[in-house]
Length: 348
Image (cartoon, rainbow, N blue to C red; front, side, top):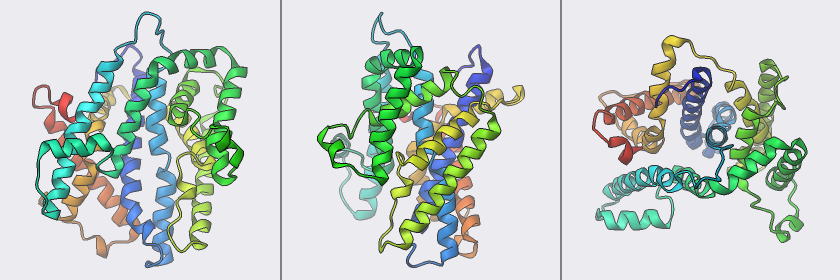
């Protein structure tokens, strides 16, 4: 990643990627404890639930950041290299999908062949975390359509209020208050994830939140996250199976927390001496996202020359230790791939 003329803006974007990536690790490492809530002590569940509640904004942060950096451009002179942008995501997706299929087949004793792995990837995500990459490709396909919409939203506050109001009502409110009529109106996928892209763009480019101090965003984030925690605790206490309703990325509590977190992060200013290191680490977040589930398994198996005695740790310490270790190993591996010429095109 190269430094742009506005280093402050780039620095907060780089910081946002790193924060979001670490949050994804917390989510995936907390998940097994959360799902086992009927067989563990309440304290362990509450810790996992709390960390997951805080980190739930991570995936929306990725989407909003992409929108903030990609939207608002004039598309009248061409499609802006949409195909090349899609290929930058699709090629690494194919590469990592093959690796994940090989990893799964290795442990299940199934044959390993690239055509079969690619065929599986063509049908859909071969690992659950890859759904986000497929979604991103879909949004990239829509970029020429989203660009004029983003410009129109920025030009008219009334249109922006209408658009985001409908988007919030259709995608967020209906999670807790289902309305069959919305389904019949075929509004249930009303721009869905592209709405997050547009929201990120609008938060950064408009003056709507200019007067909101950072402590105000922090307060909103804390209250919305607390709502996620309490709702999740309540729903799971009444359910015989794990209930993720409060964790859904379009739930009102997660959506509001994500907006507040994004606004806070946009105010980050990195000291000049850290600009290049942060920019480099940010540039390798994509392969970190692809590989992190594999690395978690390998760390648990002691394949990197060290072991974590997670069973002897408190729940909080275990989750954080594994998250930090995974993040460090992934960043190191991703950095090493950059030594190979043109590797970024293949691994991300």
